[in-house]
Length: 286
Ligand SMILES: Nc1ncnc2c1ncn2[C@@H]1O[C@H](COP(=O)(O)OP(=O)(O)OP(=O)(O)O)[C@@H](O)[C@H]1O
Ligand SMILES: [Mg+2]
Image (cartoon, rainbow, N blue to C red; front, side, top):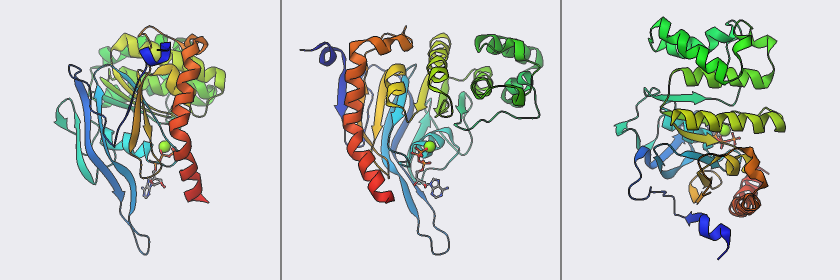
């Protein structure tokens, strides 16, 4: 048996990804669908599902799938930002309604820093809105900015920062609310490869230090393999999970695991699952 098959568990499932016994479920989607309503002569559009997913407490879970397959829709439904058309969404045993549950933070693909606020106030924004006392906010922001290497830029404005630094401001803002679940939608999509690798390492450090559960949406197979405990592979639209892959990486890891022989095997495996779905998605767009 190869090292890969000993340490890597792949389950190919029919739209369902139950957690294994003994793992605490942190968030659960059960038979979730999203059908966007039509308008005028535009018919309703079935964008997602049905999908079922158990996120285990404290895991780093990535989602890969063809462009337009419903990944952002999935994340938004889990965050309470987009209503499911069917099925159940739960976070810590409570049904997710129409707002982001306490304990959940979202980082979006696009730069969501506020240009009129300096770095400190950007990072403080969500915690202040959540009513965290000001002295506590200041302490948390100081820590988050140090952690993200932004302490020297606390009084700078987003326009004075690079794209990577602005994205770090958004991650710091999410971090300051002390989320138990972090939902990251292509947060490094606009960054160059080197910055992207370093940001991935920061995210892994954050994940380890906070013990939060992380769900990352990414277009990058390499990124998914480098960062994750498990990778959910989605079909073409309407997106469903066609497989889940356990990477078997140790918790203490960084981008240097790209040198591990298993890295190449895992990326090949994910691409093997994704290729047909990506072709289907391309075909449906032509
Ligand atoms: N508000 C909406 N109304 C109608 N259709 C929508 C809406 N939002 C998304 N869609 C459609 O639903 C499908 C899934 O969109 P979604 O943004 O979730 O895909 P995605 O996998 O995140 O794509 P990408 O990889 O390009 O970010 C797409 O075909 C998109 O056009
Ligand atoms: Mg998207």
